[in-house]
Image 1: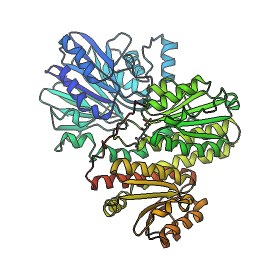
Image 2 (image 1 turned 180 degrees about the horizontal axis):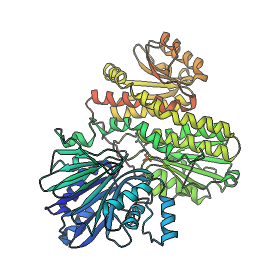
Image 3 (image 1 turned 180 degrees about the vertical axis):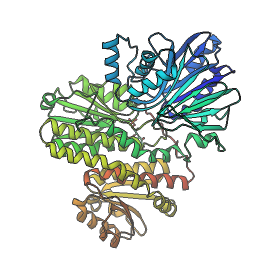
Image 4 (image 1 turned 45 degrees about the vertical axis):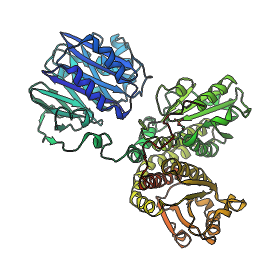
Length: 609
Ligand code: F6R
């Protein structure tokens, strides 16, 4: 997500900021900017696009400043643009701030500042309110103004503040977003992450929630929420930059697998309103609109397509509207039945996949209403949509999609419940019950991650296989497709996924002694049928690893090995069952010596047909 850096000292702040931001590039971003106190002016330079672009623009200006703040933004509120990029300034331009996180009540604060105080806003961001609030409260004491401003703010934030009137101060605040202070000789730093500062210092202070820090060139003072000074031990950093960028994980892929509980949490919780319903800010489909819709297409590629398959099950279950799921590269050429009563749902992590984008444009031209489930804010898919559901997976850097998938599933469960409420298929009680189940997934996902050691062991026993089969029924087929794709792209093993009941219509001819079959058997209502299919492959000598819900003892008698996911509703099981499959693919790839974060022949964003 966003990266922040700040500097105060005797050196020129500008190169320090740019180099620091450069070290945070791995977090993913879409715009970059700096603010520095040059002469007695707060100078701001910020641009959409790469950090290099910003650096090239400011180089000829030969800016010189002893205090400054820098930011790389990963858009949440408002599309990526020069105006929405950080730093943001107060109306007078005398205060500049950078921010990581979200000001959840920004809309109320913004309304109050505009209506009661006539403040003019420049951007669409939640962040800008912070700069205006600080200026509103400023009466000569910057620290006091910052305290008063944060008192009004709800949400998560790490903020850096500079002011024209306080050239000897850099103030920073932390609540639920990472913030560290770097200690130097006659200079001090702030950053969202240690790598940004390692070139300058290895002495760090870890800032805790609700603390406010005042940095001067000579020293750093930490205050708690009651404005009392807090002592903090200095942390000596001994590890190298590369490891830190992955936050201790060996690869982005495994880091992103571990980030899934958080992604699920963020995608859900940021949309639950005070009345226990959903607040879909960028979706305007009301009951009347939904009444007009008699058909839904979900169109996507790869992993996003697999999420769509499960989305279909959720929408048909909760809202009773027929859904067709199609692969984007096929959709446009299959004469789909589209008219103004069609809802077209595009699913995409990057929002730039050309086939998905072209399908969306085609459907739009034919009169469909376009809803997108997309991770990257302001991406082409999002921009061309009538309604947008942003998943909150955060930047996905590993080429294989992992956390984007599970947040897409969460998006579909939420959308389906919403549609069910709108068309009256879902009762208030039913909604409340399902909402509780959705809230519980995050914890179950945490528990599922504990399967990592088991998956690592199974991978070490199986990585030499030439082929792997994934089988399942119902939603387990959909997860089988995804598990097979993950294994293929990371390990380069020839893997194959099939509906378990289809095996005997041909594929069973491939079963022989020790053929590895991974049988997903999490769907309790189809369990007995799946067991029959497992028996069929076992009878031909296959080695079966089953994935089942905890508490299912009988499966141990049939399968050679059982992986247990926590107990959950059948419809939600894919969120959990896919996680051991992701970990299996990851460890098999490692055992085979592959480049897991960048598998051969693949690109993160496929912008060709
Ligand atoms: C698989 C994978 C791809 C993408 C597909 C769509 O791990 O990453 O199959 O899911 O290329 O990409 P987006 O979601 O960006 O449209």
